[in-house]
Image (cartoon, rainbow, N blue to C red; front, top):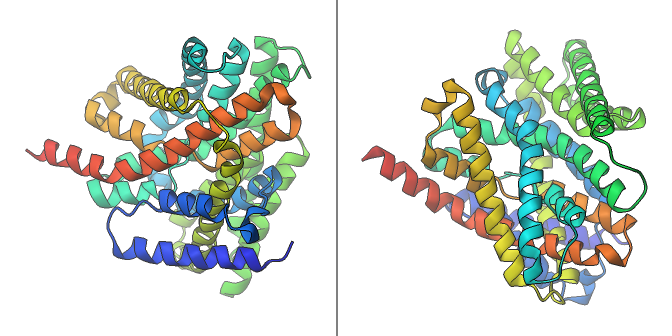
Length: 400
């Protein structure tokens, strides 16, 4: 496949992100996805395919590493309790509750088995706030909510893959299910990824002092971001969590050194460009790819109902979590829980899981794939459009 179409896609992304810089609350994901759907009708672009390997091994490591090393370690320390809960126990409860409700309402359209509904829920559970984080910061001025949202998203990407892998394996009849087996696999894969990330992140933080050349420091960061991802995956651990915790360790070490800001500036120039380039390609490709499934899909009412249910379930989990931790009862109000629920839109991880299921499944999973693709698309469009006015409204109400 020629590289020319991808250059054109980057050029389109350049225009969209340029508008985003000039217009407050501009819904970048929505615009890019709708443009992608429109491009599907142009033969030159309709043949473009995005594979699960492209998203998982090329797009995700760069996005995760950029978010992780830029994430202030002090914010993780302050918000670690709620982030850890939402990204582990919270995501397990969400899959179970959302899956049960999907099973109940699925009779409206094509009936789903309980296991199929749980599988759909595991695809729809990971959050991907992308540009929503910056919108939250600008519109509400609340760094804490943005930190919780971004921290949860980074970690739950890793835990969601483990959950999906187990459930999809049972659904496709590749393996049997047991609670003990699930918990052991969950702990080994997750803990292994965290340990690998911490070790290599610490080693990089020391190695970066060896050279004073910015170019070589950036080069070393590329090796860390993509190398640690593949090393962890090779040994059966979570590459996502390895990359995230390598970046977090780097952030911690940068905070402890006098040259920390210098190192951050060296990396920001490169990874800032990489981030918006990946996001441009990713959302446009999601639009092009989803068009294959959505124009023949008939159950949009069911998809919208599941989207609403997913928001309600997330609100219940977040509200419940803030009531469990006494410290968070005063920090996160009901309105802020609502905003955090709305801002947790679906994205790259959900699309990766969908494509992963597509590559392994037979015709029995076609309805699940089309249904979840529709819900992801609704989430990206509706939530990214609504987050700015909702945050402004809640902020105005609280200031009165």
